[in-house]
Image (tube, rainbow, N blue to C red; front, side, top):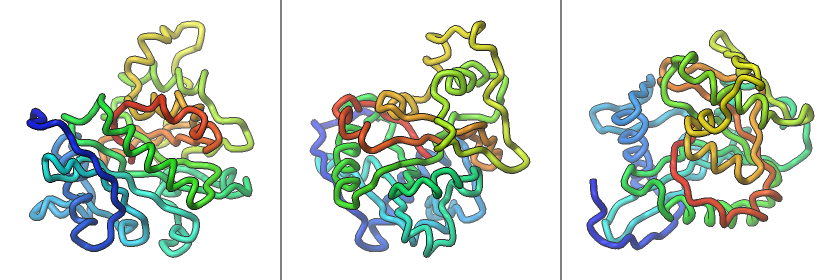
Length: 255
């Protein structure tokens, strides 16, 4: 779909059920219709991608008022929200003990997505500027979240996963580890045999954006057959984000 008019972007936080449903409709379009995800709580009749965490979190919405639509979203979970929900979303896939022991104030990022026609432009920049303000308002020190490669064929993802393992692995003090029956080692190709340039081309835009801000990844990937993704856990110091946030102009999706 083409953008008919110059975008007129505006950020808001979901304030009611209608706002949350607008976020869930966009997530359905991206995660379900575009990427083939599924889940027990997805409402296919109303076309809402939803889960049990939605009532406990903040939903950040990017509007294009020229189009009259929500075109981007971020889901944000602070420690008090995780306590109310019983856990962070990522804890179904990763042992977060190193982060929980770190003493830093945490923020989990998730369900980030943009409509396809807004990717690769300034839309993500607006979301990241708003995220930087949210981080400042809540004195966040460490952000983390599950980000996804599309598909579950690990052989096809061997190069980018190996690149992340060899070049962007989190320090031991922050190194979360994948858990569960579908854990996949990311050390699939020796570093000496990697074509790093070709491997980086396969890395999704949102993950590249985190890496440019100094982001690092946890140990191991999680293959999510229900969501049709192969997930990595990204960790980012907000001090790095504040220094380099102007570099973020990319799009993508974040679970």
